[in-house]
Image (cartoon, rainbow, N blue to C red):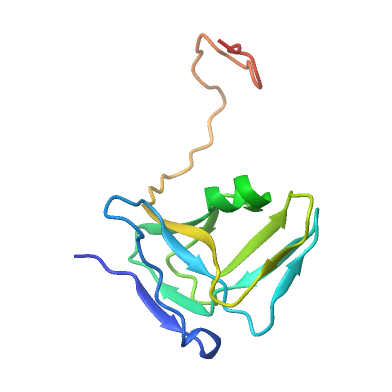
Length: 148
């Protein structure tokens, strides 16, 4: 069985490890490990520490995503979503939060701020060519396939 190895830093020793909140949950909640509350004003973004370092199995990534409840109730989401944490990264996990709401949002120690999904990664060799094959869509880009 593959495992995600987690090291708690001193400012997260009192917090639980990330865990799945239900039997079929895809994501584990990530908590804020802050020494003092962080205020995020409307339109502002802040880096929120988790106090965790992690080692993933080779061939996997962790994706940091917003929590839907915070998004709908307060307008809090994660920038660079999904944020990718590579298997060889060993620094502290941090979340880039932004406040799209109309009121200040306060992040307290232990608050569940984001979720983390572990997913397999596929790497492919990159090959330069002079021409690509033709498709029905061709070079049609944004909105080219219609709305309905």
